[in-house]
Length: 178
Image: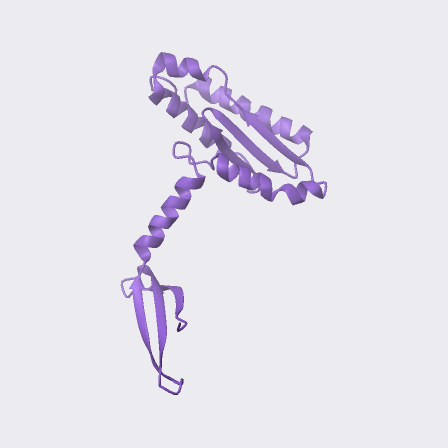
């Protein structure tokens, strides 16, 4: 039962690239118990760490919209409970675009996907850093707005929907057939 030590370190290589190294060491002991040396192994785990990052991203983000998914949204909601308990104002918007099924039926799922991605982009780019926009599932989106009163949430929602309508009317969005 000797204790080994492991630590991950990031190094910069001579060519300027960065690698993540797992440094493992195990002490070598003399018969009296004193340390006489160590076995040290350095292993490049850069690819493994990149794969882990991709897996984490896939677990918490929607691949179509690149917005956080339901799981991430629920975690954000749970993390906000303390703030809500203190009495902080909090707004949660649930948005389910009308007639989405009609778009899929008439123009195909690729057109519907383009529409969802475009709406997700609008939702994800027009908020504060503290806000969390997510694709909750299907064509359902949510927007979590900490420290936001109902009046401000309504104003923001109406402005965002007005912008969406204008973009759709102007043909700026990749709507069916685009």
